[in-house]
Length: 384
Image (cartoon, rainbow, N blue to C red; front, side):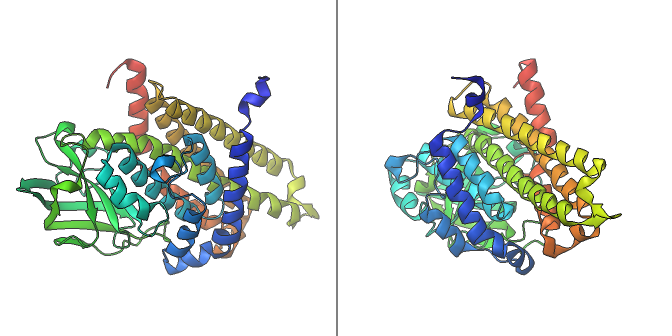
């Protein structure tokens, strides 16, 4: 294969990208600002994406999913984020939960949940973070004690995307002792007795998806809700997060690309001192840097996807590198795009300030970028 072709997407993946981009431009982009301002969760539009296979991208075909690669998924999430990073990010969470059920669940769980999750007749959320444990996820305190054929849950989950609107919550709980080995995963329906939700948080961005606490007060779920075996939940959570980190990096990439596209159009039309501001060398240098940074981000992301698809031993470190570099870099590119528009960039109607707000949280969730640096350094030093 010629060297240049090694960096080109397969034809099938390019076609997938065009489908996702067309959906993003036709369905998401025209209403993204409206959804942001109204704090509207666009479930019907996400169901339309699901009808195109975008709610179960890497769920196996025999389980009803698309059976695609992580690279395919990253390309889809980038394209969708060009329409709205917030909606694309929620779809990535839903995909992660569906994949975890397919990968770690039993036949009964797959049969129960996937036929509803694949078309998004039911939507799913992932619940790991707690008020007192974010980066130190293994310190979670939500307790599930076994009583006969049920688990009884007490505790609180924090910053849960989709909470209150989602139908299913893949929730990490403590069933054993301290540390990662005491963590298990439960599939908890929205209507579980003893489960309630906090207020919808007022956030800087990501307003088109709700964020609430999950509050468990003697919540009772059947033992059949256990995903895999007791004590395996933390391993499941980390496996899910490797893919989630690639997905959120892809969402950053799509948002930043959309911001650059808006800025590129603007600087060719905007006049200053008698000529388009695109004619000024300072503008050209900034545009050049922005494109270079996006291409570097895309290359690293695709390589990390390849590592995860190949189940390479260093896949986790590459996922962390991609998440850290891409989300930091793309937030900067979006902010640079806003700067190119000057005062107009600060106005909601131009769409860039929303992208800047949405992309800021990507440097925090799925593991903060400080934690990504720890993962990378530990892999270099041979430490776990």
